Amino acid sequence: MGILNALTIDVEEWFHVSLFRRKIRREDWDSLASTVVANTCAVLKLLAEKNVKATFFILGWVAERYPEIVIAIQEQGHEIGSHTYSHQIIYEQSRQEFAADVQRSINVLESLTLAPVKSFRAPSYSITRSSLWAWEALADLGITCDSSIFPVKHDLYGIPDAPRFPFHINLKDRPRLVEVPLSTIQLRGKNIPMAGGGYLRLYPHWFIRRSIRRINREGRPAIIYFHPWELDPNLPRLKVGFIKELRHYGNLALTEDKLRRLLDEFSFAPLREVVKTTPIQNDWPLTLPVNGRNGVFHPVV
Figure 1 (cartoon, rainbow, N blue to C red):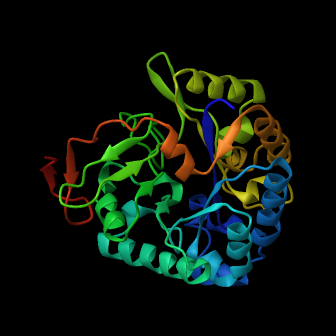
Figure 2: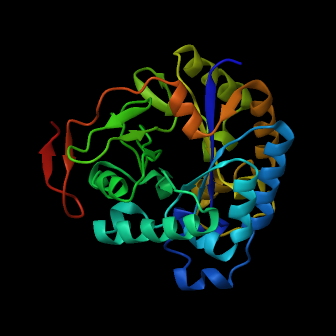
C-alpha cells in the first residue's frame, strides 16, 4: 500500500475565502448564492467512487445552515474537524474572540454528529508567529490535532522556519497537541508549497506527483488539501485584480481530473489515521505565548 498520505477538505462557501473579507460583508452572506451543498456532494461522490476516506474541516456557519452535509460526511466514514465558525483570520481576532468562535463551531458539529471534535484547521492557515497563542486556546477546547501551520513565506500566512513534518506542541500545563503542517518540498534551501488549493490547481500534475513521491521517499506523508468550490468551474466571480484572480480562479476546470489521478496514484486517509502511522517530531517551538493578541512568551519546559 505504501505510505498513507492525508487528504483534507476545507468545507466553506465560495464567499468565505479570506481574499474577499474586505469586499463581502458578513451580514450579506445569507443573501448570496450558495454552492457548498452541490460542490461538497460532488466531492463525496468522487471519494466514494475511489473508496477514499478524508478529513473534512467544516465551517460552523455552513454546518448550522446545511446540517445534511455534516451527516452525509459522517455517514460515509470521513473524519470531521472544525474550521472555526465564521472563517475569520486568527491574528485579526483577540484570543477570547477566537476561542468563542471555535467553541461555537464545535458545539454545532458535535450536536449533529454526537461525537467529539478533535481536529482543527485555521482559516487561511492563520496560526502564525503573531498568533501561536491559538494553540493553547485549542487545547483548552479539547482539540488534539491541528493542521494550520504552513512552513512557507506568504502574504497572508506562513512560518517559514517551522518543521515541515508533524510535530508535538508542548503546552506546558496542558495536553500536547500534534501539529500536522501543510506539505512542502525543499528547493535550494527554501520550502516550496506543492499540493493544495491554488498550488494544486496551478501546478502541473507531473510536479505534484513528483513532489508527493519525494516526500514519501523521506518516509513522510504528504498533506493534500482543497475546498469543494475548487471543483466548480462555474464559480461566481469577483474582481480582485489580475494576479489574485489568476491565483484564486485559475484552472478550476482541471481540479477534479487532477484529484482523480492523484487518488489513483497514491494512498490517502484521514489525518487521524495518518498521524498514527508517521513519526512525530520533538516539541516545537522553544517558546510559546500565554496571553493577549500577540502574547507574552515563556520558555517551554
